Structure formats: structure tokens, C-alpha cells
Image (cartoon, rainbow, N blue to C red; front, side, top):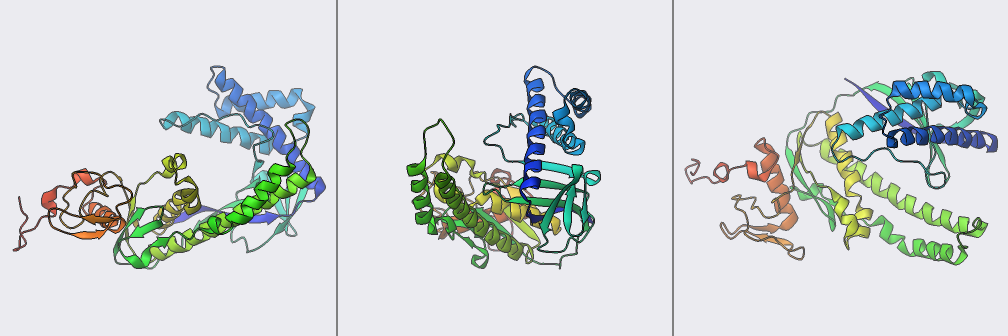
Length: 384
């Protein structure tokens, strides 16, 4: 089975190459904003109409002809795909304008727009950039995306198609419940993902850098000083370091879970609302969404059965007799006690076992599971 994956590498562009990349980005950003303007005017631009628009715009503007047509076409192709998905998915926002000051550069080239020569990435218009080959590129890439992060570092992500290596067979099932105090609580305590708080450990350094930014910040008029940019870079570097540590922990944990279970029941939890609560900082440090995506993606690629279970009533339901509590448990109550059967367990552990029980019976919601499926008589017959 083949899969499409990306291999990312650090780039070391010189001043000339970096200026060329930024100029290319501003041309693509201009075309993107023109497409957004057409959409806001009442039109529904497709890639065909946008391609004709690009041909006409390049014939009129010498500035656009200085850039690569491949990168400009890919920018419009990405816009058309994003617009199509926004109409297909209910509640998804339309593509928005990309401001000059806040949007980060992102360029995409197909195979006819780049090549690799003597270990260097050569883009259209003759832009040659050294690549830090931290690992070998196993296959011939079909496209490459050039991006710049908040620290000003440039990266190239090569898209390749590779053959999926078979994963060893595994026996067992596991349920995952997401939280903040413990990022992921599993039915087996050996597979819990604890909250390590990487960002909290460097919070004092981040605060010092941010206070230095505030002291050196000028008014809105005029550019900021070099000292301000140094302080901003220091704060961004600390935050990115913590994010990388959290992402690494999530990947190691997801691999540990996937390698040992053939059924993975995951709470379909959306942590977006936590950003508006008092737990926003801790939830951002835990990166629940990233850990969830990593687990689902790795499990799907490995051929495991991944079931997403709706979170409704999982905390209020007993994992032993499946009786539901009459009142919701407050966040301060960390122990679940069933009034019907007397079962007592950790609140999150009980929810993880409920999620697993729902998935094992082929359902995705607690309400779809009848209590008669879980209440057994002493002789093993199902109670009705």
C-alpha cells in the first residue's frame, strides 16, 4: 500500500536567495488576495477561471512575470481547493486575505519548478538554496513546499509517495479519554500520556523576554528597534522549543499505543472551547488536538481499527453496569461512584473504559448502547 508523506529539511538561504523567496511570496500573496476579492464580489472562482486570470495578469504586469509561474499557479490551485472545501464542509470559513505583516511565507512548486543539484535545492528562476540533509530522501519528490516560521527559519517539505511498511500484528484494545491534568488517560495506566508542562517550565524565561519586548516597544508609528526584535526572537524561540518537546512526546506515545493494540477507541474531543476558559494556558501546553491527530493518523496508517466515540455522557456512565448518573460531575470531583452497582474508579479511567466498551460493540455514542448489553445475570444470560 502506498502513502503520500512529507519529509522536512532546514534551508540555509543567503541574502540574495531569501530576497528572491520573499519577492515570490509577495507575488503569490497578491494573486491570492485578488482571488479572495473576486469571491467577495459575488463570484465563485474555480481553478480554470483563476488560470485564465493569471495568464492575463502576467501579460499585463512585468512584476508578476519576474516570478515563477509554477508557484503562482500552485497558489491559485490551493485557493480553489480551499474554497471548494469551504462550500463542501458546513461551518467552514472561506479563504481570507493574507496581510503583508502577519502572514507567513509559503510557496509550493511542482516537479517542473524545482530540482536537486549537488545537494542544493534549485527553484525556478535559478534560485539555489543549500539544504541541511538531516536524513536521506528515500524517494523522488513530486513537489516541495517552502515555508518560513516565526523565527525566520526556512524549511522545505518534500512530498513523496512511499510504500507502507507492514506493521507487526497486535492483539488488544484500548480506550483513550482526553484531559488537562493528564493529557490522555487510557484503560491501561501503562499507556497514559502525562501532562509534562514543557511550556510551564520555561514560563519565567518567556515572561522576562516578553517584559523586555514591552519595555522596548515603540509607538505604532515607525519601525521597531533592533533590541525589540531580539527580545521577540528570544520569546519565540523559547515557545517553539516547548512546542517541539510536546510534539515529540506525543509522537513517541502514539507509536507506543499503536504498536500494541489493534483496536483504539478515541474520545472525539474538540478542545477549542478550552481556549476561552481558565484552563486555556494549560490546555495549549498539553496540545490535546495535536496528540489526537498524531494518534489517529498513525493508527490509520498502521491499519489499526480506530473508532471515534462522541464524548457525551462518557463521564456520567458507569463502565461496570453502564448506568448513567442523574447529575453531571463537577470538575472538582475526580472519583466516579456508581449508585446502582457501587463501582468506584478514577473519573477519567472510568470514561476511558466506557469509550472502549462503546467501540467494542460497534457504536460511536453511549446512547446507542443499550443497558441490556451490559447487565448480565449470574448464569451469563442477558437481563431484560
